[in-house]
Image (cartoon, rainbow, N blue to C red):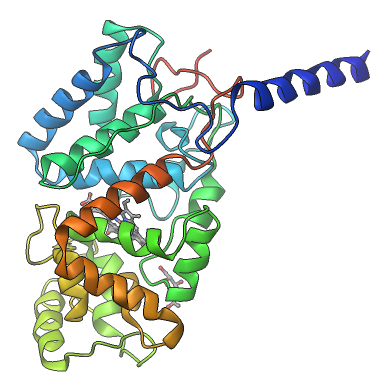
Amino acid sequence: MGMKFMTFLWLVMFLVNNGVEGGEGGQLAFDFYYESCPAAEKIVRRIVEIAVAKDPRMAASVLRLHFHDCFVMGCDASLLLDSNGDISSEKQAGPNLNSLRGFEVIDEIKYVLEEACPGVVSCADILAMAARDAVLLRGGPGWGVYLGRRDSLTASFSGANKFIPLPNSSLPTLISNFKQQGLDIVDLVTLSGSHTMGEARCTSFRQRIYDDYSEEHYQYHHHKRDKTYRRALRSMCPPTSGRDNSLAPLDFATPLRFDNHYFLNIIQGKGLLISDNVLLVDHDIHWEIRKLVFAYAYDQDFYFDSFAKSMVKMGNINVITGSQGEIRKNCRFINT
Ligand code: HEM
Ligand SMILES: *[C@@H]1O[C@H](CO)[C@@H](O)[C@H](O)[C@H]1NC(C)=O
């Protein structure tokens, strides 16, 4: 009996996986809600617009939510679940705690979508659309968002601690971290450019402004310039502890705009995080990275095209399209 049932289950899963999906991105489609919820994109855009008008940094925060969702079990809104029953929330994990923001914006979008088309639009898709809108609203590129992701039935606290890269990561660590997600060196450089907007806490850049940098950390060593930059950061972030939550812009030049200034900054050694500055270490094997950084710094249109492509790729990481997922009614809880 048990065996028969397992065989049956296996057969169903086989059919679902092979018959319906297939190919890159599973069965995601641009027009997924064309009939079931034609206003979906408009509703998301409108609410992100209002949130960003009230608080410009929210654009950065919403973009980051999609990234932190996709890197843990895939783009399945696992990030949005609160702790409850067996679920231990990813929000409590080290890289997320006291750091992620924007959950209320996602709740509001979900609330309005449930009024307009109940049980249709997934929380994972909301994150993907909101991230795109956030970038566009701050002057960045737009792109078509593939839709049809379903929401996870669980979260992974340990996965969040394991897969979200730390701000003091070395370049080899970053490369292998992205590789685990099916993302390559181009995606790493390109998506790191998201640090063209938003802010980081003192705890995230303390090591970067007090540790002595060795050559391997830091190639473009514009010593004097970095000294001035460090001095300013040190004045707001004391060496060992205290003022842990004081904020500095990730892109000191144009903190609220999505542009290519991030790349100009790291060429000058003025990336805020160690993980930003390590992109330009001097090893021949990383010639490809250096070429890309300079190309992006020189040509914003090229950077924008590339960013759109990498975001689509990131948005396809391990999406759920079958019965392992659901459309949550409330992004914070699985349906009962
Ligand atoms: C390459 C590895 C990455 C590392 C090590 C990293 C690390 C961080 C850290 C430490 C912060 C500041 C958090 C805080 O202090 O509260 C931050 C902020 C941010 N990150 Fe990343 N990140 C990476 C890649 C990405 C990617 C791929 C994206 C988007 C696709 C992204 C988007 C953002 C944004 C927009 C912010 C600002 C958020 C805000 O102001 O609320 N990051 N990141
Ligand atoms: C990175 O920071 C963490 C604490 O946030 C620390 O435990 C670890 O040793 C640091 N790694 C390096 C390579 O400095």
